[in-house]
Image 1: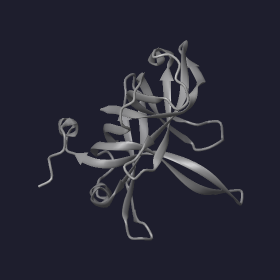
Image 2 (image 1 turned 90 degrees about the vertical axis):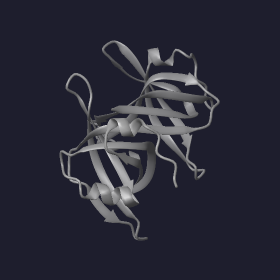
Image 3 (image 1 turned 120 degrees about the vertical axis):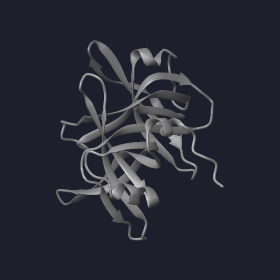
Image 4 (image 1 turned 60 degrees about the vertical axis):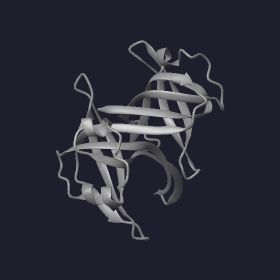
Length: 207
């Protein structure tokens, strides 16, 4: 399973990204608010067919549905793994902001469990999510608290079913002795499930 639904505000008009198999793809930057009031600026790729809603002006409310995608950045500029949402469909929308990702795959490297200086538990995960034609997307996930503890004891090759959100995170990296501001894109784990069926069911109401 690989599903993403985003609803937010277009940060700037779509710009041409690349052409693949004679299909033109455009890059969008979507601002999606969190419950905290902060927002994530998220990278979205959309084929020309998905943008049949016409021109998308800066500041427009937009919703997209599709899948998460990764590819290796060979330009030497920025991060090595590029993470984005691939829009299968895009439409204008004035609905509330929403950010939902559903994934199933296998752990492709040992989890990285640690604690922050304030004592919060955190676990980094790399999830291999297969797609058609023998291709695979390698998606970075981050889990907190109880989810971090559950992921920390998992083994490479184990199946994982995750509900989460696509997020951006600013950080500073030292390159050639200079501090450079960078942005990481990852899936923040909200809920773990035992199967795809459980993943698509709504969580039970708290007692």
